[in-house]
Image (cartoon, rainbow over all chains, first blue to last red; front, side, top):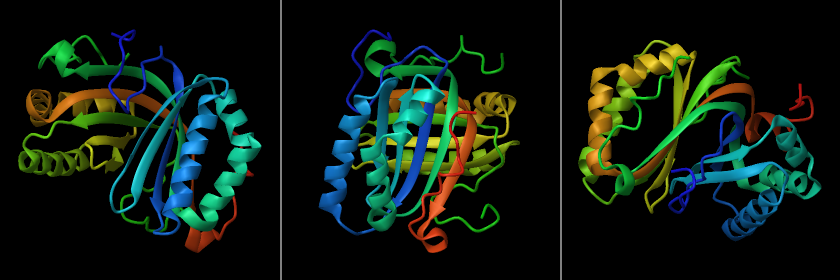
Amino acid sequence: MSSKKMPAGFTARPEAPYYAVIFTSQRTPEDAAGYAAAAAQMAALAAQQPGYLGAESAREAGGLGITVSYWRSMEDIAAWRGQLEHAATRDRGRAQWYSHYELRVARVERAYGWDRQDDGAADPGPDYDLVP
Amino acid sequence: MSSKKMPAGFTARPEAPYYAVIFTSQRTPEDAAGYAAAAAQMAALAAQQPGYLGAESAREAGGLGITVSYWRSMEDIAAWRGQLEHAATRDRGRAQWYSHYELRVARVERAYGWDRQDDGAADPGPDYDLVP
C-alpha cells in the first residue's frame, strides 16, 4: 500500500529506518497572519531540502500544536537546521510566535498504517512484532 | 530545566534514549462523545503502564490529529500494545472513530526545549550538534 496515494495530511511510508523531528509548541495569541505566512513558506522550503520525506501537523484551537517532519538522515536534519532563512524564521518564532516548545530527533524503527477503505476493520498489527 | 514543571500539554524531558510512538490519525465525524470518553480512559490507563513517560496530543478542527506517547523501552511499548482493554479500544477505533492512521515507533536520540520565560529569545540549539 506504500505506493498508494495517502489521504490529505498524511505522509507516505518511506522504508525504515528514517528520522523524525517531533516539534511540539505552544503558540502565543500574537501575529496569526504573520505566523501562517511563515509556516507556509517554511513548509515549502523544507520540501525542497535534500532528504525531506514529508511532514504531518496538527494544532488545537488553544494553540498547542505538533509538527512531525521526516528525513532520510541526521545529516539532512542538521543541514535544514543550518539553512539561513529557516534559522531567521526560528528567531522570529522565539520572539513572537511561541511561548514554549520541545524538539525531539528520533530514528523511526518501524511503521505501519491502516485505511478503512483498504483494510476494513482488520488490525494491521498482528504480523508486526514490536520487539525484534 | 528538566526538573521544572512543564507547561500544560507538554511532557517532561526524560534522558535520551527513549522511545516515541507517533500516531497520526483522521477522525470520522462519528461518535464524538464515545471517542472522547475512550480517549480519556486510554490516557489514564497508559499512564499506569510500566515505562510510560508521557504523551502530547493535538487535533485540528477538521479531525486530523497527532498523539505522541513516550516510553522507556520497546518492550514497554509492546506490553502496552498487548494490554487487553487497549486492544479492544483499538478495535472500536477501526470500526467507528478513524478513517486512516499511521503509526511509527521511533527511538529518541536527542531532545531539547525552550521556554520564553526562562530563556528569552535565545536559541537553545547552539550547543546542540545534530550530527554526532
